[in-house]
Image 1 (cartoon, rainbow, N blue to C red):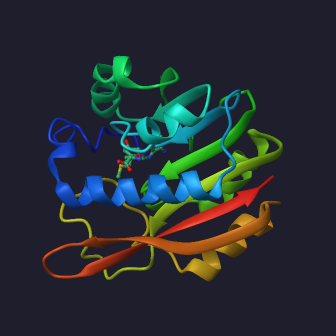
Image 2 (spheres, helix red, strand yellow):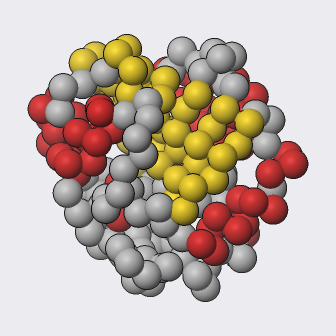
Image 3 (cartoon, helix red, strand yellow):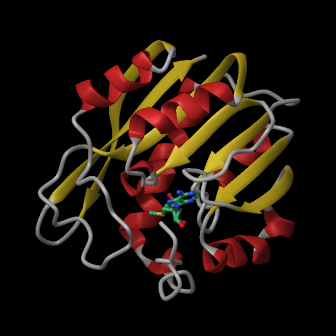
Length: 200
Ligand SMILES: C[S@@+](CC[C@H](N)C(=O)[O-])C[C@H]1O[C@@H](n2cnc3c(N)ncnc32)[C@H](O)[C@@H]1O
């Protein structure tokens, strides 16, 4: 993904009610499944405008927001004063570059379908976690291609939950669990969203 696919969407990104509601459901599930604590430093992969991280922030000490999109990062930057933990924003394509550091956990919402090589990304996540660190990754269950109406750099029309879970296990993750935690209601169809959680 070399273009800023969200350039024309960033300004109005949070005006879509079903999008905000979906990430609220995901955040509730992350807060319920991950043992978040003060002192933790976590990364949000594909952080966008910060819809997920702003709800996780009060439970941790710092969040590193990684996103390839300059325009989405600019929206998050505007919200910095309202984010209730330390916040670092890094503009980076995590499929092409790496962050040479370890985190206590990695969260991600609705971003993995923008990544071509899921196995490689799980391996990268694993290498970026301290032993016992967690991942909490939410994305679409396999859909018919109708979810996106514009080209935002989509590689996968959602994921088969069993296949997604197996890729996380193959990368070395333990305690891998997956459940549907949200449904995006669009006029023509409903789209279930899962949360995968696991530990390194
Ligand atoms: C659908 S948005 C989700 C944003 C946010 N997590 C949410 O749930 O509202 C996907 C985000 O992932 C980012 N993204 C896609 N591929 C990426 C990559 N390879 N590295 C970093 N960010 C990426 C996009 O720029 C976009 O902001």
